[in-house]
Each structure stands twice: as structure tokens, then as C-alpha cells.
Image 1 (spheres, rainbow, N blue to C red):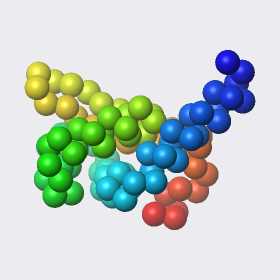
Image 2 (cartoon, one colour):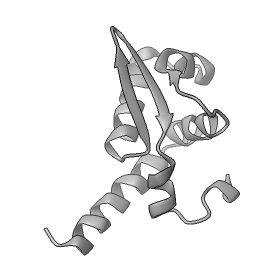
Image 3 (cartoon, helix red, strand yellow):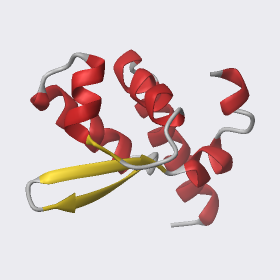
Image 4 (cartoon, one colour):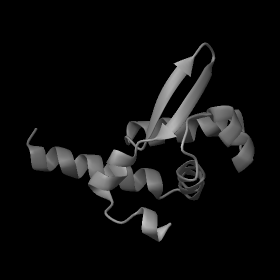
Length: 95
């Protein structure tokens, strides 16, 4: 796959992930934190079910917007700001 096509596909994943209001709220919440946090804490803060949270975290992870670390049965997430910087210039100023 050519680099341009790969970059375009990556950008499409990023924009699709951010097009959902719940995922955008998750990103806003994570942007205020300078450390990783458990998926359960975010689901509780967003008032969404664990199943719904898992679905949204999977899409955010596949788009490269979050990094997930699993410890036993718990998953911890943190924003991958480099993805935002690569695909969304000035994103943080517009939140």
C-alpha cells in the first residue's frame, strides 16, 4: 500500500472515531487527565454501560487515538496525542 493511501485510511479511521458524540466526550475527558485511567472509571464518568464503553474504547484504540494497557482483568487507557498531532492540527484548541 502506498504511503498516501495508508495515511488517508488512517485519517478516515480517526475522523470516524471522533464523529460519535460519546467517543468525542471520552476524548474530552481523557484530554483533561495527564495519566492513564481505568476504562471502568471513564464508563462511570460518561454514564455508559461496560459493554458500550468496551465498544467505544475498541474503536478509539483501532484509530490510534488511545493506548490501552491491560492488567489482569482491568484495562487502562491514555490518549495518544501524537495521533491527534499527526491528523488533526490544532485539535486541542478547538475542544
